[in-house]
Length: 387
Image (tube, rainbow, N blue to C red; front, side, top):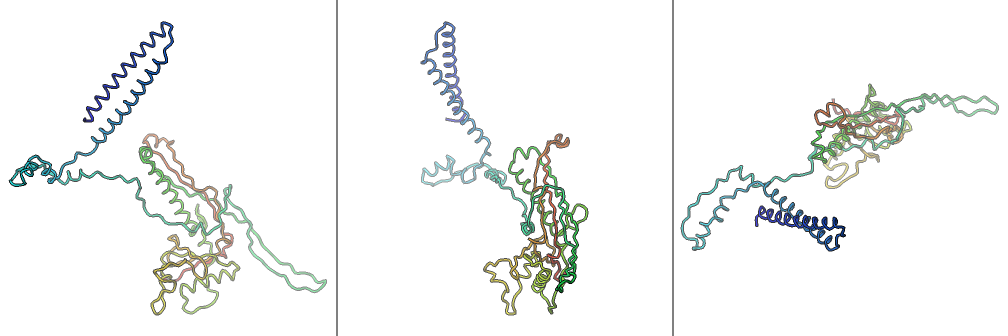
């Protein structure tokens, strides 16, 4: 039975039972007017008819949906081979032992028709651009705050005059100078537009835009933490406040590895033992590829894995660090990152332009402050390999 015939039969059955329900209803109404109670048997009969009607309606919807789905599929154009083997001429020829000749008019199969044979598969996974991993925030202690800035006392100088003294003699005075320092909270933010249709039809897309906007904030945050110049609304970053590298001892023909070890010594002599090293990905790869005179790699067998460490300290390689530059420091001791407001993403359709154009505005922002409390705990320099 075809879909259309089945639909007609089901509709007839529904109509027939609906008439029976109507008839039963009229009988019950007449009984009520005469003051008689509707019998339990009559009620059960009506309930049974209603259940049957609901079942037929559900079956009707299912048949109609199947028909719509088949109609939505592209009409399949048979290949030349299929047209031949499914023809009556070919079947008659094979019934006679396959001897003889047949002549057929075949339908043209074009490349466009062949393409229509293949229904495209829709992938729900969105193909996004690659994203950088972030590391600098993980090096620093992070403290939540509820103010627009952070004030903290900072020692400027220390003059220690402690000495041995004779009994009854005057004791010397030492001198310490303090000042107040402020780390202002800065806002990192951006906007993006979405159509209302995209939000309604592709909820996965909204999640992807949300993730992209969070990533955009983190991208700027990492650049600010390392290289913010402190002007305008920029943070004062680690590199711009770090102490310049000056080799504490002279090493003839110092290599990159030597310079990093000397920077560690410089920090240690300032009483700030380093706990990490930050390099560009290019410089870290260059160091890893160093070989002995007989061609063996200094660090590890290329077929194995080795932890990113130099002189006992973890190495963080990031695209945020300029090529040829290095930063050695006591990150957990020398600076603090303050979170005034974590990353927040909001969607609004309230402004007039969005309302008229059926758009939505997505806003992402965060508020942070960076206090480099001990600039002497960070040693910044360059390897001198790039002019």
